[in-house]
Image 1 (cartoon, rainbow, N blue to C red):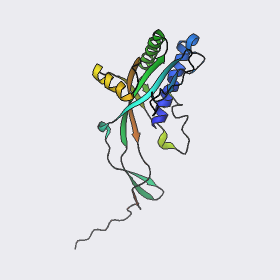
Image 2 (cartoon, rainbow, N blue to C red):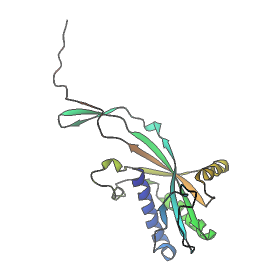
Image 3 (cartoon, helix red, strand yellow):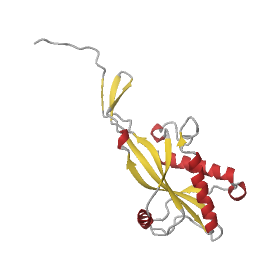
Image 4 (cartoon, one colour):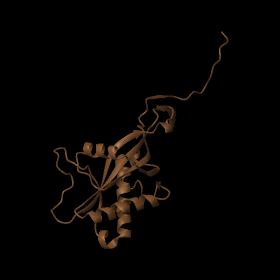
Length: 203
């Protein structure tokens, strides 16, 4: 589900860039999903030494959304009732970092990211029927429903700590909070036939 949501937002951002700036970004995908650093400490995005302009989407935090806590649920399958644990609702924090050898281009791309999400804060299957296009039919748990995307502000201290944790040098960037993804395992924890008769005894 995490992959479904972030890949969808990445694809939509690429389509937006191609519409808005065909001359500079119309022939390639600028946005990509990647960590910033490899486990060996090298930078994760490969460059051949020439001009490069990339917007890198990196998940940096998960937060449980307890406001949407739900109770144990039940569902009927054939002639039995199944008990399923309630879903875990998560908010996802994604940093959009601009990697380029031209600082002015970095500022332009960062502005496009902010403009994109200013005009598109809600994503659902009604407005975006293809939101789950990459999900196989036999993997319904990977589908997302409704995504709400909001700008997440940080202090200078928080920003410094984040980039230190990422192990990378600071790049022009912005963080967005994506709400809410519900993770649920449909494997039942208990199942039983329905109650068809109630007997009351006065003994």
